[in-house]
Structure formats: C-alpha cells, structure tokens
Amino acid sequence: MVLRHYHTILYNSYFKQFFFTFLFLIYICAMQYFIDVILPLAVKKTFTYQVSETEFNYIQNGMRIAVPFGKSKVFTSLVVNKHNLPPTLYLAKEIDSILDEKPIVNLYQLEHWKWISDYYMCSLGEVYKSALPSGYILESETIISQKKDTLVIIDEFKDEEYLIYEALQSQSSITIKEIIKNFR
Image: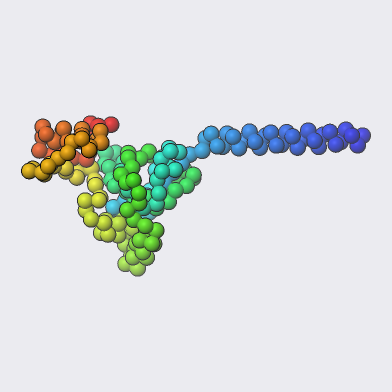
C-alpha cells in the first residue's frame, strides 16, 4: 500500500514536470516582442509596436524607429520601453525600420522629458518634437531633395541609399511615403 502511494506521487511529479516543461516550451516558441514608442504628436500615451526577436535584441531605449501610424502615415518614433506584453485594446503593428545604430537620446534625457511634460502639462510627443532638430523627425510628408554642387561618393552608399540617390537623379524630390512605398 505504501509503495503504491509512493509510485502515484512519483508519477504525478514526473507528469507535472513534463507538463510545465511543455507549457514553458510553448510559451518560449510563441513569445512575442514589443516596444513602446513616443510619436511627435500631441498625444499623452505611448504606442506599442511588435518587433522580431532579432530587432528586440538590437533595439535600445532612445533609438529612432520609423513606424506606421493610421492608414498611410509614417512617423519617426522614439523607443521608451521594451517588453513582452501585447496591447489589450488594439493589435500591434510591425515597425517599418530601425533608423539608428545606437540611441540618440539617453535615459537621463528621457526622464527629463517626462518631467517637462508633467510640469508644463503637455505630451511627451510634443517635448520630443521640440527637443530634437527637425531633421531627426521624419514624417510621411517629409520631402527629400538632392543638394546640387555636392561631391557624392557613391561607393560608400548602402543599397537603400543608392536607390534613393538614383530616384533623385530622375526627379527633383521624393517624399518619405514614396520611398517606403517603392522600396519595400
């Protein structure tokens, strides 16, 4: 009788260990990665976007990310948080591209921006838009044109940069929206 009871306990503990290991593996395989970003808009909240595991490991707080917003707009956002919790009120969109190799804003600056937004009762997006030079904040309507009489070393271009350069040879300007639409 005692041996039989011990066998049941042993079987149950092995079963529990197997079951929880199986659940953990399912969780790891289905793990999703998200970032919270601020947009250069007068909106109080941050927005959550989905990223791949590789992007998640590369991205750091303070980096700029091009993200879709609404049906057809693209904004330069700034990463303020990384996590694994999907948003509850909407389905997270994927990012368009990572714009920086390293953060352009450090954690002290982000904390200062949060203080400014609280003190002056404005959104973090408004502080972001005011704090960075306008050249760092690209929007769908941003127009890119080539500066004439400038020495250009084509050999140093990345593939995407060369495609934009070629497009500017046949037209005077191009918008960010057109670049995203044509070069995906």
